[in-house]
Image (cartoon, rainbow, N blue to C red; front, side):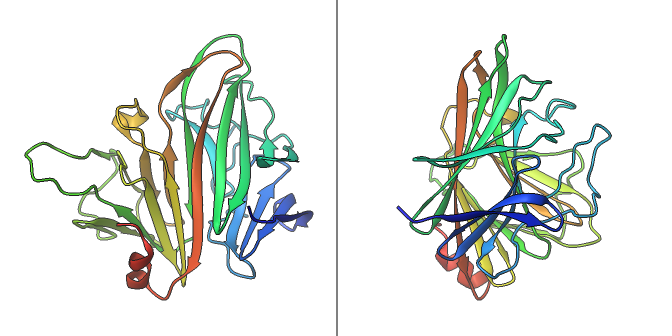
Length: 289
C-alpha cells in the first residue's frame, strides 16, 4: 500500500478542499459541496479535469457542474439526477481510504460516498450509494470524469470474432452526428477529439474491454472499471458513455441498474492511472489493447 499525504486547504475558487498527494499524483476534493474530485493531475502539473469557475453550467435549482469528477445516479432524470449537492461534505480516514460522504438527497432519499485509496501507481475511486429512505429505489451508479479541453479520448473496440454473431452495442444519442470529424471509428480503438466551437456529441457502449483513456498535453489518464456480462445496464445496455462539447469531454462509467432496498448500498469502482506520454502513438503503446 502507498502512503497518502493529505491536508485541508482553502482553494481560491472552490473554497475548502482536501488536498491528497500520493507519489506523483495530486487530487483536490471539495468539502463545501459534492463530493467532487475537482482536481486530478501529476504533482506540480496541470489539472487533467475541466473546471467551470464562471458557473457556465448550472441549473435553476442550484445545481452546478463545477467540473472535475462527480458521482451521479442513472438513468438521467430531472430533477433526481441534478441534486444540487450544496451541503458540506463529511470526511474521515479509514483503513479503506479517505471517505467523503454527502448529505442525504431529499429527492431520491439516497446518500453518496466516494472512497479514495491508492495501490502502487493507481488511484482507486469507490462510489457507494445507500438508500436511506423507506421505499426501494432503482438506480445505477454513474461515475463521470470531465476532462480538460484540447485532448483526445481513446475507447477500445471489442476483439474481433470469426463467427457471424454481433459482439457489441453502440448507443447513439439524438443530437449525435455519426459523421462528426472529431471522431474516428477505428477497428481497434475509437478516438474522439475535444475541440472548441463544436456541437455536443455522445455515444455509449457495452465496454467489455473495461477501460477508456484521455491524452492531453503530454499526460495520459486511463480509467479501468468492471463490466458484468449479462447485467442490466441503463441506456440500452451501456457500461460506458462518452460525451463532449465545446468546453470539455466526459469519460463516464456505469454500474448495473438494480433495485436498492431500504438501508442497502451498492458500489461501483474505478482505477485511475496517470502517466507522462510524448504522444498519442506513445500513449497507445501503454494501453492494454
